[in-house]
Amino acid sequence: MFTDTANSIFKEVIDNYHVIDSVDQEFSNPYDSKSQAIEHLLYRKCWIDTVQWHYEDIIRDPQIDPVAALKLKRKIDASNQDRTDMVEYIDSYFLEKYKEITPKPDATINTESPAWGVDRLSILALKVYHMHEETIREGASDAHKAACQTKLNVLLEQQVDLSTAIDTLLKDIENGDKYMKVYKQMKMYNDDELNPVLRGEK
Image (cartoon, rainbow, N blue to C red; front, side):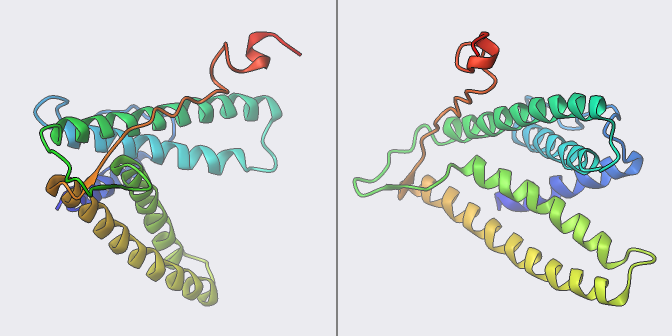
């Protein structure tokens, strides 16, 4: 199943990140962009999500220097754009993979493309990792650990359900029961011509 590969790579990414555990560490993708195209994309996607997860932790520090916070906000904005771009690259992979499939006359479209499901699965892997960390955190109370274990159980159930849904969607596309379309996100706030502040208007 596709999500077996995805979940395995997401765990690999998160474990690798936490060896150094720094948002400033160098990125290296172990998967070849040509011979291992989808693995390469999945690894990069989850790395972006993992770094951004920690950006979001840092910027919530109530003692953060305002200048540093603004600089970090710019990094988060850039990371969000990278994240969106990676989703579109992953969807492009699926479009190419299924380009010869002719949808059945009664085929329907899904509420989200496969890659946006993958996006949620990547974030979910991060939630699972960090919630598990809370269940074993030294110094945390038994009540805290128990509460986090309950939440972790829900996250693990959600991970199974979301994985099943993504695999089912891909199978339906492959069988012609569903078809996919990709709408570019067309974000307006990063565009010099669409954001009036960037355009210089007041």
